[in-house]
Length: 324
Ligand code: ACO
Image (tube, rainbow, N blue to C red; front, top):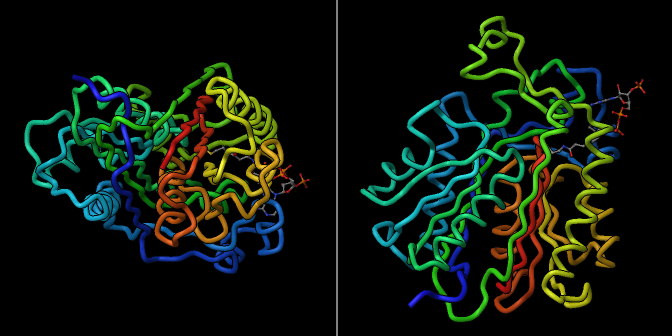
C-alpha cells in the first residue's frame, strides 16, 4: 500500500566557518555596508574554504538531518540534491554524498534549478515517497555559489554565499507535504545566468571571464510579481486561507522581496523566517537552511503550517505547503 503523504522526519544544515562581512566587501569593491544592508538586508555571509566543496557542505547538513530524524544512513533509500554548483561534472553530488554516507545501491542524483533547486528536489522526492518507491528519502540543497562570482562585480558579489540544508522524508498517513507547485519559464534565461559550461567548451572559464551575470532590477520585479502569484495560487489550490499559515519560509534573495511576499500574505515579519542578514543568498541551500534554523531555534513547531517558496535563474520558481 502506498502512503498518502511524505512527512519531514528531521532537518539539518551547515554553514562554512569563514565569514565575509560587508566591511570586508568594502575593501574589495566600491560599495558600503549601508548600501548592502538597505538594498538587500545582508550584513554578512559564509564562504566555503578553498578546499571545501558542495559535497562537503551537503554531507554535514545531511548528517545533522539524519541525527534529527533518529535514523541511520543505512535507512536512506533515495538521495535527491538540488545544486547549481556541483563539485564535478560527474559523478553527480547525490552519488558523491551517497559514498560519503556509506550508502550503496539506492538512486542518488542531483538536479539543477538554480535557487529553486531544493524545492524542485523536495517535490521529486515527495513523489517517490507517495508512490511507495522510497521509505526514507534524503533531500538536500547545497551550494558553493561564491565559486562562480566575479569578485569585482559589486552588483552580484555582495549577494551570494555558500551553505547546505537537508531534510529526511518518510511516508505518513497524515500530511506532511500537502502540495508542491513547480514552474519555470526559459524566456527569462538572459536576466540571470552563468554563461558557460561543458558543451559551451568552458571558453569563458579558460579566459577568466565566466561569472554570474544578473540584471538585478529586472530580476527583482519579475521575482516579486511571480512569487506573489505563486503564493496565492498555492493557497487557492489547497483551499487554505492566508490566516491559517503559521510560517513563511522563503528563498533568501533580498529582504525587500521577502517583505513584499509577506505583505501579500498579510503575514507580519514575526512569522517569516529570515536568515538573509547573516547568511546572504545561498541559492538552493537557502530554503532548507531557513527551515532548519526555524526548527532548531524552536520557532517552527510540529503541527504548524509552513509555506516554502523559491525563485531563481531560468527562471524557475516553486512552493511547498507543509504541515510540519
Ligand atoms: N554597492 C553600491 N552600489 C551598488 C551596488 C553595490 N553593491 N550594486 C549596484 N550598485 C549601484 C548601481 O550601480 C546603481 O548605480 P547607478 O544608479 O549610479 O547606476 C545603483 O546602485 C542602483 O542599482 P540597481 O541595480 O537599480 O539597485 P537595486 O535597488 O535594484 O538593487 C539588487 C540591486 C540588490 C541586486 C536588487 O536588484 C535585487 O535584489 N535583485 C534581485 C536578486 C534576485 O532575486 N536574484 C534571484 C535569485 S538568485 C539566483 O537564482 C542564483
